[in-house]
Length: 511
Image (cartoon, rainbow, N blue to C red; front, side):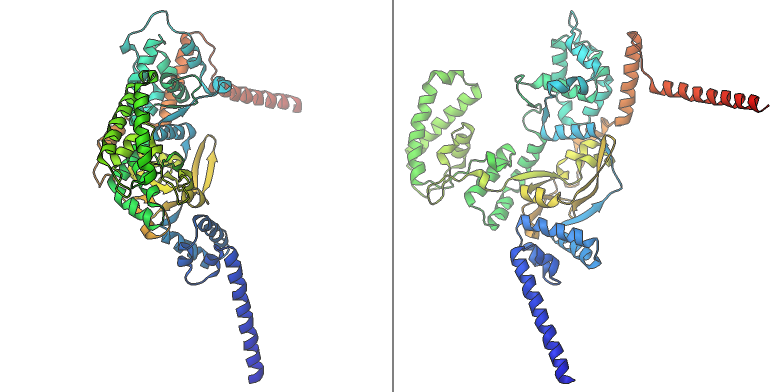
């Protein structure tokens, strides 16, 4: 029996080795399987995965968790290690027009409505009044934006309150009847902003925010306050220092984070750069002395002049290879569209391209589509609700298993990932040291928040007011008013009367 038992153990020991060998072979082909197969050390397995493989592991665990409770626990532990938790909601719906307004405020841009869609998306009141100006101009005081139900929705956002004067000037200049304000839908106002701020009829995406957009302001301020720490985090991941410093510098100056727009510059002078500096000084002087120079905007003229003066001074100073390039010189060259002077190159002399390195995107920690539960939808774009995330993590991981539900013209998240730490503001990986917390407001109440609360209104109430304005306008202009409620009430009376008549006929027949 002992011999037989020994053979049994050997057999199963060999089978166990075979299974492990098979598992390791599968894991070698698909590293994400390690998190699913291993009962121990799976957190470290997860940390060792690429962003793409981490997304695959998340999907494997999510789907397996539906059938196995131990996998469900493993999923929670892996997500917690990455700084996340799964949040489920019964539905926090927001009308698509409100969501669109949040996006406009966030990006600072509005897309032009295509010509073929104008009749469908814009109200007949707006289309008629905007194309039929008055014979003479109205008074500026006649354009009272406070009387507009739709503008009240836009006024919840500081960026739109700042352009109210521009819109008033546009309406005044084009002699538009002031009554238009009471009749415009939110979509009409989007189009009015486009008409007011467009630089040409061919422009498809119109920027309306002054100075810097809400999105870019967040990125810029984050980098200004935490630039050194962000650089250290990225260098620890092993990225080229020239890319890292160029990216964070672009964030600090312009609030941009897309690597395709990045010029990666050298940190120290190289023989090539020193040669190019002398050529650039001559080319810059030639540009300043050309006839085309006087056709440039004054800002561009000043940028070229500043660059020439700095190049001249640097060439006199006799820098040597290995000396640190003054950052102000790099910034001035980039502002004057001459950043190529300092462009970084690899060992083979090839230019380092920004698109070969990570980009970053801004993530809403509380979903914009669920902003209806906030005291004001304007809160959705506050800096403390935003996080700068590596773009591949955002697309391949954070939003990989979102569940969205729709109801009529409203959408909401039923399930999504949310950060455990509420003040996470920067994330470049899944290790704890690859995410950074920062509280922009440090518990202080914002002046802007007080103002936003003052302008807070209900979407439904504004739309009811707008419907009444339309009805009043139609009656004043002897237009036939379509009233669905009246028609339905008449129909109910008709059915009731008809039912009584049939019952009466039936009684007469039975007699």
